[in-house]
Every structure is written in C-alpha cells, then in structure tokens.
Length: 342
Image (tube, one colour):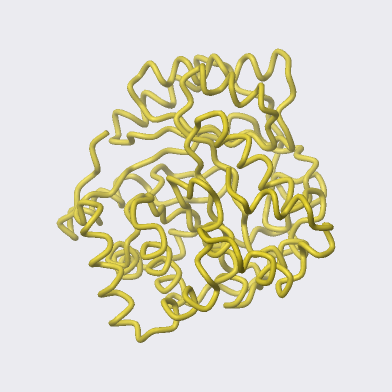
C-alpha cells in the first residue's frame, strides 16, 4: 500500500489537520503529485487547461461516452456523524424522516429499473457511521449478490469497514466502494468532527487491500479555499492505487445543516477542478455528481469537455434533488453524446 498511509499513521492527528505539515511530510512520497505541480495545472489560462484536459481525456476514454450511474439510499437518516453538509445527521434539525434498511427485493427492483433506464453502475448508500456485523450487514451482502447478478457494476457506501467485512463484500461481488475524503486535511475538521481524516484513509486502505476498486472524491462549496481544493487533489494522488472513480460534488445547501447558507460554487472554478482532476487521473472515471440541478446545461457540457465522463441519473441523489432522466437523455442527445456501455 501507499507510503502515504504509513506516514499518516506516524503523525499526531493535530498535525494531520495542519495544511503546512501535510505538504511537508508528503513531499518525499514519489507517487504524490506536488502541490506546486497541481497549482500549475489548475491556474493556467482556461483555454490551455481545457486543451490539456481534452488531450488527456481522448487518450484514455471515448470523449462521447458518459457512464450513467444510479445511487439508491438503502437506509435513511439517524446517522451519528456530524458532517456539516448532510441532512441525515442526528446532529442537524432537518425535515428528513429516518427510514430503516430496505428489503432486498425492493433494492433489486430499483436496480432493475436503473438498468432499464441505461445505468451500468448501481450504488447503495446507508446512513451508517460504520458497518456492524449482524443481520443488517448480511442483508446488504445479499443485496450486493443479487444486484451483481443483474450484470451491473455494484458500489456501496456504508461508512467505515473492517478488513473481514471488506473481504465479504468482495466475495459477494462488490465492484467498488465509495468513501470520500470530502476536502483537504487542513479544512476537514471545520466540516466534520466525529471522524478523522485518518479514519477515512484507513477505510480506503482496507477497501484497496481487499481488492475492491476505490471510489473517492470530494465536495466543493463548503467554504474551503482554492488551496484546500488543491490539497484535496494532492491527497487523492497519494492513494495507491489511485481511485478508479472520483466523484466531484457541488454542495447542495440543506436547511437545518450548518452549511445551509453556503454560497454556490463559481462555475469556472468547478470546471477548473474537473479539468485538473482529469489531467491528474487520466484513467479514472471523473463523475459529475451532486449539485447538477443548480447547473445550467451549458455548464454541464463544459464539465464534460473538461473530462467528466459520468453522471448519476434519477430524480433523487440520496436525499437531494437530481435532474430527471428525461432531461439527462435530452441533454446528451443535444451534445451528440451517448451512454457508456458496460
């Protein structure tokens, strides 16, 4: 595994939250793209940045193909974490009503509908801090088995994992596991206090060592600086292997959460992050994820030109609004783009 994890384990958590310390003790990791290099890519004139991103994208992907994914919320609310962006936290006074873990046949029915609508990856999210052995996890394992049998890529996001649980998910047929870093090490504690950056990295390591592809991204618009965004990308580049899937989310401010009044992400900043991500991770799927209802068709098209090659379809993304499938189909048709086959 990456030397990054070993270095992190040696550092006190207080040091981990220092951006300057982050840059210093990652500076000798050969696989880590330097902050200076990432900044150089990000800050170049936009036409040059997009040209470089397009060249990189075309070398490794079909520039017309967009993978369609579907994210289902299989267990809603009552999460003990205090993530400042999330409506499902017990720490926030939102209108969300908790719901128990779904039945297996309900989830399989959703997966079948997603496949019929063109999705090739079906993701299942549960509002848990961590996976606990027992009947609920056994049910999730059976969900994975049955969804995998539909000839779909299967992804889960269930919180922290132990090695034996990751192994069980792998054996059940799990394709990928989503566990986002969210933001930079130095900004992280301003958004979340119930789980450390180290915790997140350890879960990602557990997933990788089980042979499961890593889906790991972040959220823009939580009050972070441009430097935080560059440090976040540096943290992603230090993972070994680098994520196969990188979701780039724009915050959807939810009433009752600490970030309910956060200003929207500047559209050009979003395009710069997408393009920089594509250049840094040429073979990864870069997923334009949450916040698309707040984006114009023109902005989404520009993100595709910058290297995003996946979206999540369906009217709801976990608990947040998402464009209707009919709108996505019409947009791709207008752009001359097509759903990516499995």
